[in-house]
Amino acid sequence: MTVLSPPLVTLIPAVEGDFEELVALRIAAMRESLERVGRFDPIRARERFRSGFAPAYTRHVTVDGQRIGFVVVKPAQDQLLLDHLYIRPDYQGKGIGAAVLAQVFMEADALSLPVRVGALRDSEANRFYQRHGFAFVAEEEWDIYYVRAAR
Image 1 (cartoon, rainbow, N blue to C red):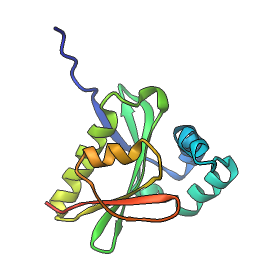
Image 2 (cartoon, rainbow, N blue to C red):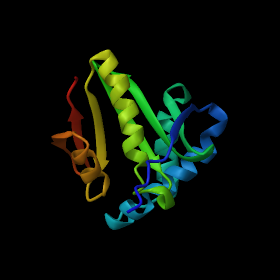
Image 3 (cartoon, rainbow, N blue to C red):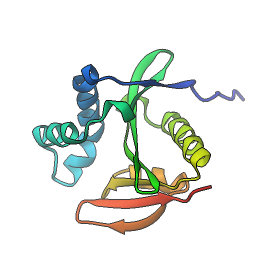
Image 4 (cartoon, one colour):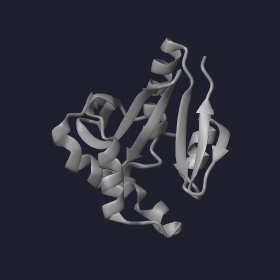
C-alpha cells in the first residue's frame, strides 16, 4: 500500500495588486454553493469581497510554488476571524485546507485566541469546519457561524 504524504502548503503574503486574481478564485470556489442556494451573482460577490479586502491579512495558499487558494485571517474583538479560506475546486479534497487550518490554529494558539468562521448554509464548508474542531455558535438567513476555542 502506498501512503501519500500531504502536500507542502506555504502561505505567501498578498498585495493590493492581487485583488483580481483573488476575487476570481473566490467566485470560482463559491459558485457551486451559491448556485445551490440561488444566490450566485458574480457582481455582488466581487463587491462584497472588495468592501472587506485587506491585503495585510491576506495570504496566498501555494503548493509547489503554484497559487491555488488564499486565506484571510483578521484580528477581531478577542478572537481571530477566519474571514476567507478558498481553495481552487480542482485542488479541494487533497488536505490543503486542513494544512492551512493547522497553520491558522498555530497562530491562534500562540495568541491564546479563539477562531471564528462563517460558512454559507448548505455548503460543504460546514462539515469541513466541524471536522476540524469548530463548534456551532449561531446562524442567520444565509450563513452559519462556528468558533474553535482558544487553546
